[in-house]
Every structure is written in C-alpha cells, then in structure tokens.
View 1 (cartoon, rainbow, N blue to C red):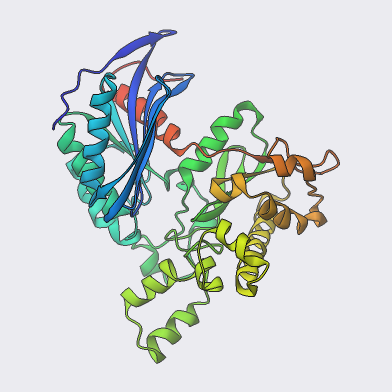
View 2 (view 1 turned 60 degrees about the vertical axis):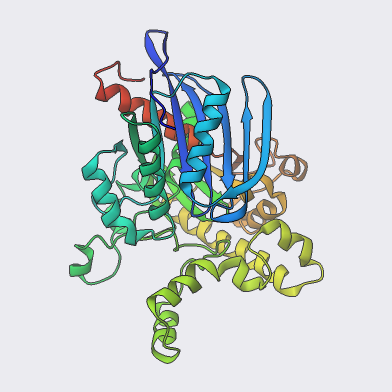
Length: 411
C-alpha cells in the first residue's frame, strides 16, 4: 500500500510547521515517531517501535498521543519491510495527515558523508560503500530507506548521521596512530551517538556549560567531551565497537588480543567481529546477559555478574577522568541512554570514583532522578537528561526539507 502525500502545513510565528516521520533502525528493531515540528517546538503525535524483527514472535507497540490510545501486538515481523508496512497501516488507521518528509538515523556515513543531508541516488551509493564501517547497523538502515521510498513515493527523505556531531574533531583527537596511507583511506576517529549528544545540547539551550561531558549509557556506550557546545573528543573511534565496555561489545582492546586469536586460534574476520560485537562486554564478562537489569538481579549470588557491573563502572570512570583532562576540568556531567537515565546504582558507583575532582551526588535526588542529582557541595553539576534522538532527527529533517524547497530557514 503506497502512501500518496499531501503534506499538512501550518504557520506558527511565520515559520512553517511540518509533520515529520522519524525512523530509527537497529539491527533487529525499528523505532518510529510522527512529529509536528516548528522552529521552536516539537510535538510527538504518534510513536512506537517494532522489536525482534526477523522472528516469528515479533513485537509491535505504539501510542497515539492525540487520542491517548495504545496498542501492543505480538506478530511475525520477518523483515524491516514488514515493520514499515505495519507503520504505514498504523498511520492510515490513525487518520492523521501524511508526513511531509521522513528522517532516518544513520550510524555511520563513512569518510564522505559527514553532514546530515537529503537522500538521493548518490547518497545511497555512498552509504552502501560505507556499510563496512558499521556492518551491524548500515545494511538494516539502507533496507528501511528503500522500503520507506517504496511506501512513500516522491516523499523527501533525509539521512541524519550519528557521526556528524563529531565531524570537526581536531587532528589530535581525530587521527589514529597508524601509517599515513591508511589514514587517507578514512581510518580515523568518527565518534557516535552524535544525535543523542545534539539533543542534550539542544535541551540545555542557553544553560550549556563551557565544559560538558555526556555519558550515553545504553547497550552501546560512549563518553563525549563538549567544549562550548562542540564535540572535541569522544570515546568511540572508527566504529561503534570502540571505547568503554558495552552490553555485548568489548570496547577498546589490546590489538595483540586480536592478533593472537588470528594467529594461534585461526580466527577469521567474521569470527573476530562476532566476538568483539556480539559476545563481549557485559555479556562476555558475566556469561549471563547483556541487560544491566538482569545483572543487578543476579549480582548478589553470581560473582561474574557482580564483576561485570564493577568493570562497566570502572571503565566509565576512567573514560570520564580522561575527558575531564581533555576539557581541563568539568562544569557538568550528563547521564543519558537507557542505563544512564534509569540506573541510580551505576551513576552512584561511577561518581563515587570521581570524588577527587569534587563530584558528589545527593543520594535521594540520584535515586529519584530529580535534577540536579549532585549534592549542593559538589564542584560539578550532575544531571540526568533523556536522550531525544528521534526528535533531533525530526528537527534536522524539517530544516533540510525547508531548504530544499526554498522555504523559511528554521531558527
């Protein structure tokens, strides 16, 4: 069922207000949100996600905020196309006006695509060529783009890159210590979770401090140093596999570990990728699970689960200290992402190891997540702010769409 689009637009303060569909694809999931986006406000109208894509027992959940209606289904979702078809049907059933444009989260655009852009055939070719940089993410994102183009023919579509926020890193942070011929092939530090970082900076607005550290803690984990609103360093590198310990990803490893496995254990590239991206991190250490909630439940009786939590926090504490050094101090630390927003124990354990710099949490405020969560005597503000990646996609999509049609540029 193709959707023919007649975009609904309204004028808010002289600037066009557009409906934008944001699609945020993972390897086995697809989050979506239909937003009404203006120059100074964003309102979600409809949102949800498809989970366990590729399985017989997929899950599809959605909430219509206009009608305060929710649905939750268990159904086969064999591919991203099935997920897109279910979203299209949901939009039709909601009787809402069709979106004016669609925005896609793209984890890695490679060395050429470093800024958010309208999608055309050239961009699709470049994305396909860059898929080797993020094989866990880019192929599924490309599938979502193709299926969205199929179901919304002629609709403007925008690629929003997680690497864009970090695109201006100075050479001292960007260049990897490898031979120059490989540097010229695009092997450098890219950094990720850029849309999340952008959303935090946008939410802070005029309250953005000069020296800010954003700790995005989810299944993927990164720590970024933000100087006067701009990224100057970040923990992830060439790919989203680098940096600190994550759910199933190892983070930084001694390269000798990989060489040993190749030389002595005859590991192939596929075997190394599987080990580093899918069988390491919290899952590898605990031998139990990558979900921090499950590890907390098991930690009292399972030494490996306890160790996994401690190593996770230890790894983050070291990276936060490194970013404090990069910034020559810190004015504020923001925790975001699923773990960062919801796990008071992890936040406490990490910050307890930063008392040397004067970081102190208020136990009650940390437990409730009431900002700021720091003690008044703390030398550094500490906050918990929800990541709004999908809203950020909607903002960029509106901006690029209006520029493409010669409309008013958003403020």
